Length: 545
Image 1 (tube, one colour):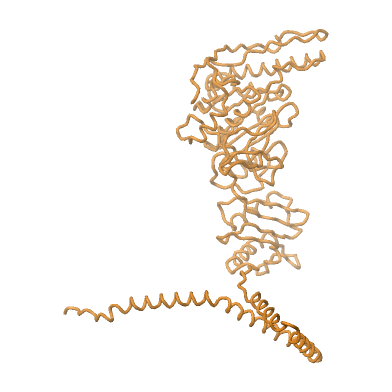
Image 2 (image 1 turned 60 degrees about the vertical axis):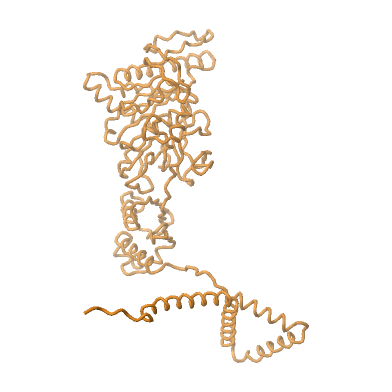
């Protein structure tokens, strides 16, 4: 049976109803806007009346008579005063408008979801912060969490961003294992994927957990305002260091807190070791150090990986050599050992004669060794000495001879580092995602934060000598010849490179330190002929545009 169409009045009724509702809603909104002052004053009058009624009810009966007489006298004075009623009306309307204004709701405590999260965290801490013999436990199952959590803050997603915990005095906060258990629990219960910092106040029995913002990755390689002998390793939190450096970032020029490494004769950490996973940014760190070192010294680069990451330095003014093969690496490092001895002998003879050290012994020499484990494996297979053995003299006596050694290695090959490298590299850096145990093995102390499983390249931790463990973000210094490098970063690196020499041909001449020209202690010191630096035959390459 065919369906008959509805009458027109029924089919168009829903549209008319919708339009009528829209018109009524618009009229109500307009009326509310027009009558908003009247609504505000009415709300204020109700509040004033309620306040007066509450005060009258709270007044004792024996004082109500004098109070009523005083009010009547005030009203009489207002009535008899010129313009008194008008001024009284204006004052009452003003007070009513002030009392009836819409005030923002002030949050005075956690909501239900936040309270449930705090209660769950409190219950999870009970087994660690309580003992059976405590008569008045601060942490107990079913207890009140407000006494233990003195301060807390949440983000827009309802996750904790700051928490201050008061724990009992008998908790063994001096044991690293006990503290690690608490930190791991708080990290798991507060949300993974973020970096937390834990500040233990052992004297006051307080623990403050806070979420750290991510370090900026927008700072690229550039000229840093530093003194000779100072190298910017990267940037850290503002409250971790007292030194800031003006930098050019994505938002313009700003002062960024920098981790500054000091080298030279008065440095307590003359050499550096950087360890990380593949792609963590250790090579970018060495490129950044090389660009800063070329401003005041000479650089010798030995690359064990053989991937050509330092090709942009080849043939540059101040770059003695960029070696990728085993033979070239051994020859260059042997020259560096003899050069260190020559500098020591020349400086010592000059001091004995009462003269200043020769100029060629005061110019800094940087030895950058990337992935020495690869070269060590090749040397062992070929029956030749390990290149790390040739670093003993520069590592032991480099501080007095203005020779600085920087070694970069991967975590999986860190056990192949020689004892000399481990002993004399007091400045340490660990880059990339790593466990607290791996970071502690490199830096000698665990970080006060929880490492995240995913970090950008160049992110890690640094420790200079026995100082604190600092978060670190290395300035972006990629290979300018890499096709994946952005144009801005490529241009930033190329602008920092010295001029390329038109031709660079020299022969490595190994001269033992004992054969240096003798200088009589009683005769004036003549300038010592500098030993020719290690440089391989380099093909001239036209300068970049």
